[in-house]
Length: 101
Image (cartoon, rainbow, N blue to C red; front, top):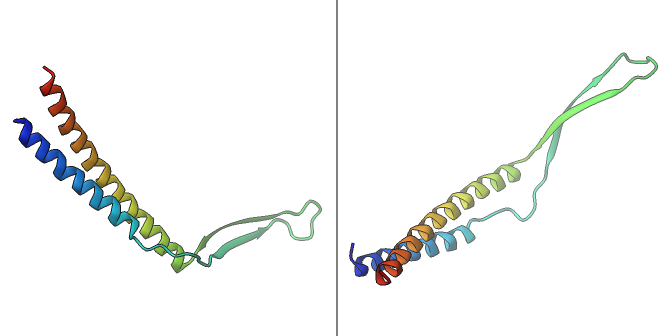
């Protein structure tokens, strides 16, 4: 590959990386959200000495789901941006190395 072509590819992927990373900043995330805790209680031997309550559960809400989806989208955009930046850097490094051989 010629140096000019590698420099062009490097510039194109640098632009792609910038666009993807900027796009990730525009993903809307909720500023606050409610969490509804859903739990199940199990009472061992009611009324017995040493009785304990075992409680397990999880929290959920629509806003929490929206936040999770937004974080997934941001993560994918950031990953794609990183790949583009890596391709750009490799092309730029190849031009540099070829110029010094």
